[in-house]
Length: 533
Image (cartoon, rainbow, N blue to C red; front, top):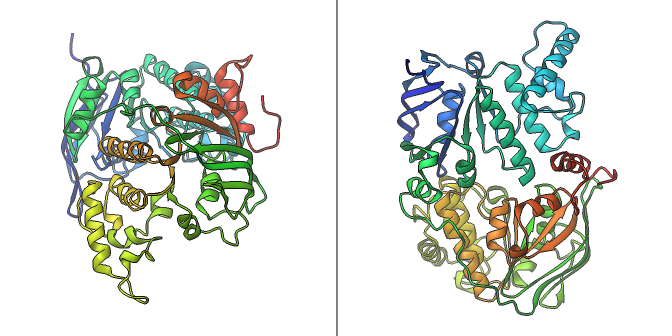
């Protein structure tokens, strides 16, 4: 019996962008009918390698073999012709088109659209039945949930005859139940002979889903192992080059008096949409309250109000004193004077000025501090630079160069710059949104330690994250937001991801229909004013 040819084989792939070597002599074999994981820190070269395979980039050196045949992939059309499909982290769908129209877009088989749509409708039904990818083909993309949208992306690839599917961080926007459903679909695709490449930073997903996993570090392939013969700890060490603490190490909270009290808070955006609906909660000194939820359910607006750049009605008290919510004094400067520090959800748009240096960014919002003033008119730039050097050392920012533009740091190091600026101000209340979004596993460990250390100093922390594992491991209490409301509050020790996942979809009791179906209905109806189940 002859050995089966790999579905994909890359030999000696190299790619540089100017002086940056993104991929260095990478070779990898992916066998047909398997799920092959690829993991690595930010900047390890995973996305570049997959972009070469899908024809977005052309390799400087190396060869690609598909099914044992040397194949040239100069563009994505050539990749599709070679049987490769890619489902991106951010979906490539036209929101005001139907599912059916999105699937055939760019793959119409004649100038007459109606016959193409009719043929596609029949083929989509067959594909949906075969792989368990049930969708409503006439629904508009804007009216369906993200879990359903992801199925549409998979159907798009299958409709184009893909035998190889690349999925880039596929669970980043899914509830736990939707993620479980996705992995059941992948199992079915695998059983039908499809080959799947899974890019994810979630080690548990790698362990639960893949047959083989390849680890990349600094543009090189450092290891390929059978998943059954490795562990999360070993994979983390291979990714980072040192041992990594995967679980948050923290003592039980010792909460004190309430620092933050929110009562009947309501936020309506510029388009008249009610984003936060009669929300009430509190956060005590010495505790972390985690806010869980699928992105877009009011968490961002909540942080914006607390941070001072969104209007609201209701009452917010910090240390017993009321905050102004009218916009007259609702600015970040006044919030900082009240002991509030804010690490925003989007560090690049809201936390940093990317073209400015690290030392300039560490002073933003705090440039009136006495230690930064040379006189009543001039700031002491040397004092700011020296302060930045000390912060970079304490927060392990790499490279430790205060003059380097913020855009030239990795995502993890950009986040450390923002954290250093806010945490080192000794706030009474820290607002922190998506603390480890786009951050590699080594930096995640460090950031979690800093958050817990601040809690242990008696500070109040409001944590917003879409990562349920992060919420459960960091929080002392968990509140779940859906459609602008608090659906419930739980202690991490008394709940699990399934229960929180249901609350994230607006379901407070076990539904009388399949869980995923109930979730999809609720997520699709959120914000429409329709009755939720």
